[in-house]
Length: 342
Ligand SMILES: NC(=O)c1ccc[n+]([C@@H]2O[C@H](COP(=O)([O-])OP(=O)(O)OC[C@H]3O[C@@H](n4cnc5c(N)ncnc54)[C@H](OP(=O)(O)O)[C@@H]3O)[C@@H](O)[C@H]2O)c1
Image (tube, rainbow, N blue to C red; front, top):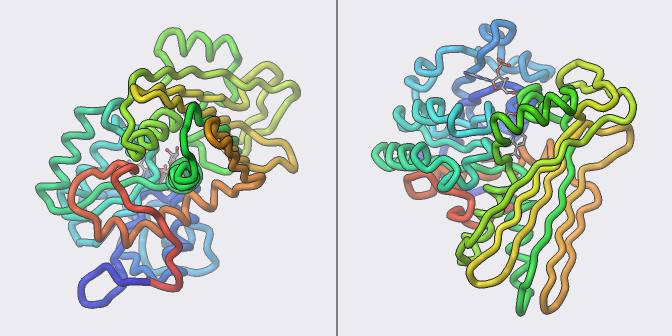
């Protein structure tokens, strides 16, 4: 793997957020020979312990999980791998702290995939902060490969496109409580409906993903429509992420759907189903291109949990080498496998 850092050394990495994803990322970073120079956590159950223990590895890594992010960042690093939350509103200050300390950020925070229209002020302020400090903030995760770059590559074989339809399904229990809580898992249908009618439903993954896709294709958004459909339990279902039993009629997931029409004509639709699986179910990824010719892309079994983390880690050299600023996914180059160690 090309070495992105000075003096031919592997990158110095901070693990920011040691939940379900941060734990897997830690193992992959160690496999790749990254120098983990800090770990940031929140709960008293994790803070003060060795990162290897917290991440469920069978060895100590000699890095203590700390709660004072400022202190960890002040010691310096090439990049922080941030696996904490989903929206810029909650993530802005975490990212800003990294950027202020001259530390690049690669994250699985979903809105950072394309934050320019859903959180424009926060995105612009982070972009400015990154430029001033000469560092980069970029997102990766399942979007990077399975919902973006595979599709743009497939469309390279199209002569004319009328419509692109994506359908994906992933298991809520593959992730931590952050995701399950966000999706209202376990809430009765009526409570969910009331919540959505009072607060609206924050667009989650599908919108940002399609906007990045459309931008990469140099098309112009004309209209964006999103909706959410609750997926309800028809028998009691255990949600491991929350440690609860979901009752019949309550939520085991949601289907978030966004449709983007473009001024040039092609229409893009993505339905993203996140729900608690039953035994034997697999994550799926299906895309259909209507046009000349019609094309299909089908991944019958996609391990999104793992590939979220492996895609993120593979992006580390790209992000360190990228120009300063907040780079949405359409602005990043094509991802690739990185063999061996950093
Ligand atoms: N883009 C993608 O493909 C993709 C895929 C999966 C997940 N995600 C997103 O990634 C995020 C993390 O997912 P997950 O499954 O790892 O969730 P999780 O297990 O709930 O982990 C979230 C972690 O963030 C930590 N955290 C929260 N506030 C913090 C703070 N102020 N300082 C330090 N750490 C803090 C929590 O720490 P404590 O445990 O100490 O409280 C927890 O460990 C979610 O928002 C999820 O939606 C994205």
